[in-house]
Amino acid sequence: MRGADEARGSIAVDGCRRAWSIRKALIVSMTIALCVVGILAGCQPKAPSGSTQEGASSEQQNVSEGSSGSSMPGDFKVADAGVWSDTQYAQSMNAGNRGCNACHADLFSVLPTGEVGSHEVYKKAGFGRVYTYNDCVTCHVGSGTDGAATGGAGMFMATTIHGYHYGNQEFLAKGNCFSCHEADAATGELGMWDTLKYSKYIGLGTSAPGTETWIGGRGFKTGTVTGGVVEADVALKNVKTDQNPSSPDDLYGATNMDFPEIDEKNYTVTVKGVVNERTFTLDELRALPQATTTFTEICGTNGANGGFFVSNIEATGVRVSTLIEECGGLLENTTSFGAAGYDGWAGPFTPNPTPFSMDLLDEDAMVALQYWGEDIDQFDGGPALFVVPGSIAFTNSKWVESISFFQGDSEGAIRSVVDWGMYTNTAGWFSPSVDGKTFKVGETVKLEGYAFSLPEAGRNSIESIEISADYGDTWTTIEVPADYDGNRWTRFAADWVPQKAGTYCLTAHCNGSSDAGPANDGKVLITVTE
Image (tube, rainbow, N blue to C red):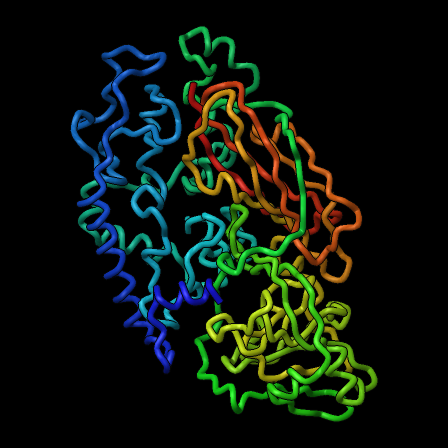
């Protein structure tokens, strides 16, 4: 596959594909991070924001010592308004030097991915996106806060991040706590800049209504002290939706365990807990009736800002129902199912088998042998994957070794990720794909993105997509056709012509029939100029 080839070149997968020790992974991680910081600091100087400030006198312009000199990325000592206007308030906010991506253009560059096994994420971001704090926090936090739904599935990130940065001379010379943190006006507690920068009180300088007139009377053209602006009931034109497959190039790569050694000549898949347990070779699987379906695979730790760990995949393979028939049917009182891979993954209860309620076994559940009409690369879980459309990705199994059916008490079987606090309604942006894109007043902005409601056997379905340009105070609805397949995402495209210059926060929201789980809204900051 094209995506797999590109990723393979970036991380040099060898034949053995063995995991590093934790110690070696940490050493390499820090080495990469040091190199990146050094490169950024030495090769990408950032000039300070301009000297003309709207609504401020010339005496007020230099808000930090050294603002007349050049600035390195993330240099907190040199004021930079970032995506906001060059006002005294915005420069004092110093947004251009805050957050992970102020120093690291793409956090993928500092992940320990020198060899397979050092991190579960092993591909660059798809859909024109980059890795940000919000793509890490869903795993690496201590609780379900800061926009993270799962909370603490991975190592506690704060320990290593604080330890590394305060042991790094580059950071000590240029940064401080507020390079990463920000006070949360809603709670009064310390939060993360990369999450809070999308809030109204950061973007507009206040969350109080009706302040535009008197702030505008002080010389601020936008009516805000930051240069942030809003548009109520954002006007969309040429709205379109579809459920087309994504590109193989955008297939995300993540594995819960290490890559196994696969010998396709001796590869088998065993079906257990049936009338006649049977082991199928690859040739036997390929000889059985094949079915094709398109389904959306979304990671349980998809990024907290409408992440890109999502793909709409055209899969071909053998339906599980066909395999059950080949095995003489299910045993009586079968209540749950599960799968295990050659990598050792057996679902979230690994190393123990993970049972899933039988009602989650979609009719298109299959042992997939092809994605997008091509044999599945071993790098992406081939030659055979167990996939269950309509369920979260951890129900699936790469390099599937066995599919098991369980009888009797199903008390411990997983029925919904709602019980795990995971996102069930997600929307994200493809265009604009990252913060900081610039457009012109009166010119058309092409908006594109996706929305997906996790079906889970009919428990949820998408009803509409909503777009906001005023921090969620008003929403413009994009209707989703009632006959759309719930197992697939809905892509949307629309034209928007901004009428006012300033910095906007665009929000995409997926409105599902069930709001039992937390919503994952996509947000992006753009600048519109005269």
